[in-house]
Image 1 (cartoon, one colour):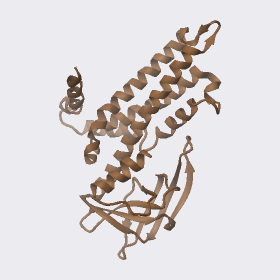
Image 2 (spheres, one colour):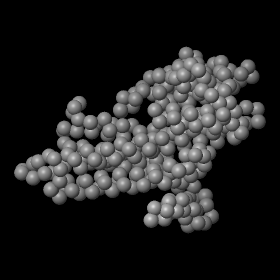
Image 3 (cartoon, rainbow, N blue to C red):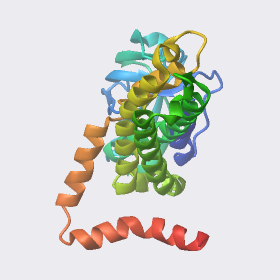
Image 4 (spheres, rainbow, N blue to C red):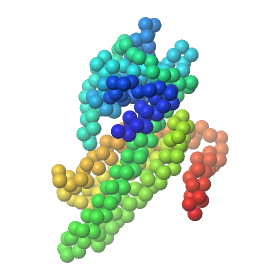
Length: 284
């Protein structure tokens, strides 16, 4: 589960905290939990990945000076309304009110900033997953177009199918290139908060997901929706991950806000692209 690896474990690692022995831990994002005078914790989140599976919930709260503290709450103290995304992955709407919690670590960062970091890590995880699924959907469409014959010719020989394959491949290439630019900063999760390459990666992969699913199913026809065929498993995942940890609209708005807040747009743009250009020269 990418969210557990790249979000929950990233938070625990940043705080030098160990995961509780019970296991089954997932993080509640993107909300900041509150504590009362007795140390009891409350939080409400509309979407928490794998919440029905979790035995413990990891929450981000603020201590007296406003630093982030990681607190674990037993899932039995939470009200979890179970849902599934289009791909069948289980998530839940979580509400916790005045529940006892166990502090497992503190980060020397403002609590709200750590919440944003966790959300950014989740967006990076989904971008990588989307990139991989997009590649598989493209490969399936190309294989089907070459192997399936209509009117004595393979589908790939028809101009309309060639056009759809070209648009599909272009979307996948752009999305995967955006992800490759964003991935190197995973070593420092806090840097992802204001990183324009992350916003581009999530926006581009989410945008490509809808187009890729549409084109791939047009090329496959009805066979792509059958139980026996694998295409629909990937396209349903694409349409689910598209909105999780922020849709293309959310991250496009974040990118626009960042661009509008700079005094020298071209200097900002070149600075955002410099790592990618340097990587390109290293492979030349």
